[in-house]
Length: 216
Image 1 (spheres, one colour):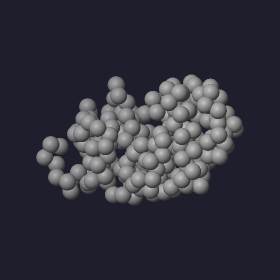
Image 2 (spheres, helix red, strand yellow):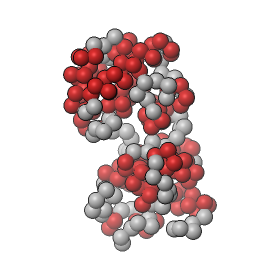
Image 3 (tube, one colour):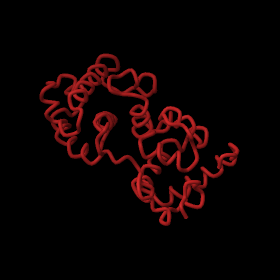
Image 4 (cartoon, helix red, strand yellow):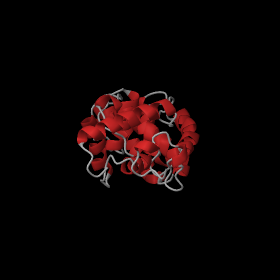
């Protein structure tokens, strides 16, 4: 794949996308949420933590702090206690309260719908902003690059870069804008399935014949 042209890579990417879409028709974010606020909170908590653990914590968190107004006035100690099991709980509690306060102060409690404004909020970087925009508002501003997406982008020959930011740019070159949000979900599902970090199951992979790292 070293000499693959941009056109050929895009065509291969299109076929891979279609095959993964058929393989995982229900691919979507695994974080339980009912609105942009809950999605933002859950995504911040998911840093260095499994989605399953976050989903165990958020019901109680949202019971106590159901909206930005309540979270903005939350007791730091109480919030730390609630999110403790997600790891890095002190920093996460600080960011959650800071995010809610900034949201109330600068946006009237409503989440802005631009990458620039979202990334100005405490605890929200480009990855989290992409999650919110794509999944809460249907706005494709970029590709969410987590550990699964990073690994599969390399294995499938879509990027040789090492940083999430550069990998994201490469993926945005290969796939059309309207596929940026679902692409990350499909790669995550596939990464949790036959293409994990260790012991890949290429014989079970529907795109093995299009993957330069395939063992079959």
